[in-house]
Length: 186
Ligand code: GLN
Image (cartoon, rainbow, N blue to C red; front, side):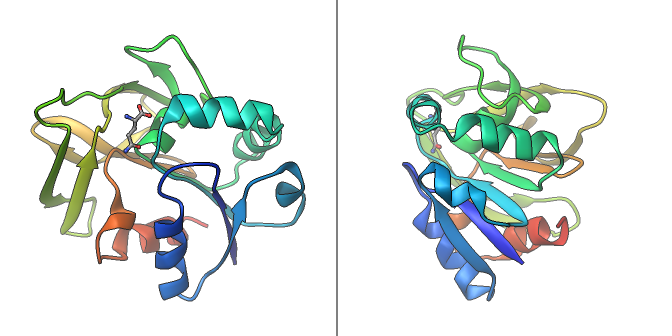
């Protein structure tokens, strides 16, 4: 199994470290030729969605990655990665891959709560550590989506078929279970 990690900006190294720890082959996606190889899953990390969106276009990565996702490649978006996958963005006119039937609210916790840490239940995994950094949450979602976690009545993790999103950063904590969950989808 081989996972491509979008590595233009943001917290991509942390995802690679978790996959290394799990013994899963992974590589950085930085330019067009990187996506020409065979791979089995894609990670879209946290960072700044507007910057990533711009770089994806400039580097001609946008269309090939969108096509892969549309054709069913398993994808895991964390934080800004969630925004990249959202069909709707409540407080932004940009749209990116727009492959997942969710409406995200960007920077949804306001300044005071810009960053916080909590432990909360995730699907059947029990409590997992959740680090939020200027995070979005999911305001609403389509009927094909499954809610995997909520914090304060806000949806912070969801899945639609082979697409998994978390508003928090599982790659920043010493817990591999959310990544293992993603790998089990492949
Ligand atoms: N606030 C960022 C955005 O809107 C996301 C923050 C993150 O990925 N930690 O893209």
